[in-house]
Image 1 (tube, rainbow, N blue to C red):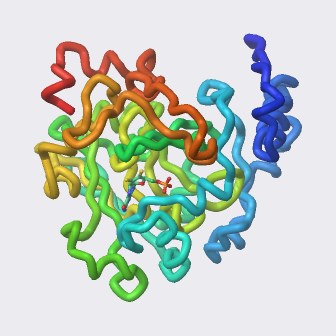
Image 2 (image 1 turned 90 degrees about the horizontal axis):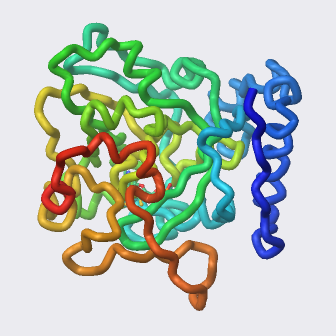
Length: 322
Ligand code: MTE
């Protein structure tokens, strides 16, 4: 087993979250992740989970392959500065209004170009694979970013269960619509439901993650409970929240933001500092929590994941396929 180095954490980076982080790093360093937590320790408390109790713990095994040494965005910022237009367009609207969303019972149907279409109960999806904790960068098209510890597993694990056919070229994610519980639906900015999508090879890439928790706890409603996706090399709008349907398709789906303004938001939406949004630059970003006087950070190609994903786009003009 290869040795895992503990990256140096500058004193300025020490926050309660960094303490949390180093505890997990210690577990990894000791090579004792599984042993220390114990097999039982990794089994989530399903009674709390089933009741949709958001503050309940959701233990997950840290995955050293997807671990960043960047300072984490605080748990408070992760759960109070959100985009979830079903609850309004203000950054605190999701925190203020998402509590009413019903996350139980909850099913996710997988349909379209698959040999074994199936509707999964959310509790079965949670148990489908052991949960990993991965720290991902999230870069929003609005030019701010966060560094977030998500818990879940690769979407590919789920898709393999339903056996995509050779015609499955794209995957579409459909968010729930709960008119009584989502005050933002009254705004017709988006033709609800919120729809996002990926090419099948992007969806099958191990970085593309089904997320059930954050910061070691059940995902709060405002972050997309009970299940969302996270695709760290793409702008945040690709990561659909509170998903109820996944469709495998032969044709590229018309996604919500492409429908609204295809000249501003493309289907691929790969983070690319060289391709500006028509109304603002994408070359730098503001790290949420760093304070308004902190210098902006240079945005990295594919949000820093180029080594893993650049090969998916060999031969494609990324200025045209933005
Ligand atoms: N999913 C739905 N259903 N509705 C939304 O408005 N906003 C997207 C994405 N997923 C959105 C969504 C955008 S623009 C971003 S940046 C991320 O969610 C934000 O995720 P977070 O609030 O958990 O940080």
